[in-house]
Length: 126
Image (cartoon, rainbow, N blue to C red; front, side):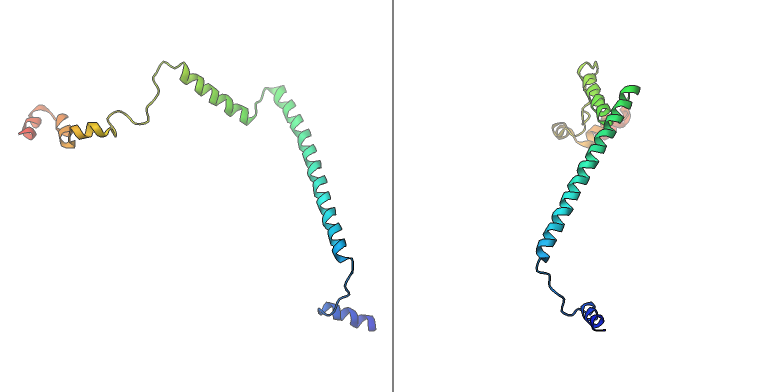
């Protein structure tokens, strides 16, 4: 019975027996965990390298390219097209849209009048 009450005291948060080597044991446990983690990472890196070798073999066999390679080739083709292109490169802003100097010369009303039929232009010009 005596042992049972001693264990009850521990469960209720009473005085526990302090392990003099607790800090050392905890440090060893942490080190073991770190070492296991490193071994696990090395194992998975090795497995992934093997998988990548198999993938590359399949790509070579069937002439498939990686996504990064396809994107790089598409970009290179786009740049090559623009070098030997017969058409001029597209401008970001079409002429007449956003040119401040042109807007200062003519008001919006003058621009609208310019596109009206002849008799209507005469009415507005007067």
